[in-house]
Length: 376
Ligand SMILES: Nc1nc2c(c(=O)[nH]1)N[C@H]1C(S)=C(S)[C@@H](COP(=O)(O)O)O[C@H]1N2
Ligand SMILES: [Mo]
Image (cartoon, rainbow, N blue to C red; front, side):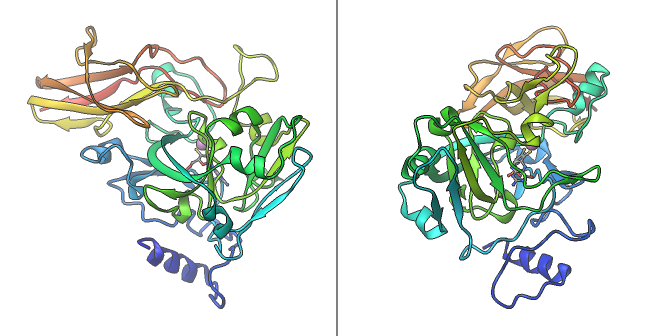
């Protein structure tokens, strides 16, 4: 495994003896690195326990985001789990035959593969402040809190049926095996977020492969949920259990976080489910480029796919970009004759608005981003 070296480094840094293979490491002092894989500054901007992909680093890569460049969003630290003792429990009032599955059990079941983006609900959050002058709470991502991969795994619907899903089941609650999330002195427990049974039965995977190889530690080894089209928080990593219930389930990740709160919403807020359309240039933020002919490249994405991508290089007119490939996201390109000076480039997927509705935690930023570029 390409990541084996960093795992060994991480373990020796944490001073844990490896007597009987890898085991679940409790997260220690905050000095311990949260993310296992290397985070070269050319590919990532690090925000605390999270790392966002630099868009310029995607130029020249194919449609799938290489694991080495895929963003990481960790509430605490990547746990190093032992695949041989790992089990996925499916239990609760909504199933008649609770299951406990090993990695081997999971891999023996019929699998399928999907190409899908995983995107943090807070992707683009910093633009609420920099473009709209609004203060919002949370990690100040630009647009790099997204990646596209081919995921292989077992449809969650199949597992629920094997567990004897009851007709009256309404919600499932997948929980991670990473450390409890403690914030402001309060322990909120395992990272977990309820999902309606209807979505669970639709297109959700319990994935064990990413881009044709075992899931790497940072992305959920040995298994994670992949919930296409929905906010990244739904795609629980390091899956340990899934409760299925005939009554609604909740956790702080749907009552306190990942809920749209603010003047435009009812007092209890609106849960975040589907993501919104976005688009980005494969260019550094504030890039400096030589004058002359360029081919602008980028990607656009939306839960139902993107039909049209338009680019404005003059602040007034829009030109239709050529769509290069489709899949989890749509790659596009457009020629640009760059004249010396300061420019603001804009790209929009379908009907992306100029302003994004405010919410206090800055979720679902969907407005057209104004990307500064200097031409010399
Ligand atoms: N167990 C667990 N699952 C998790 C998280 C986490 O911290 N713990 N973060 C969630 C969030 S907020 C996002 S955006 C995605 C990020 O997936 P990635 O790190 O593989 O890019 O994982 C989700 N699943
Ligand atoms: Mo997220």
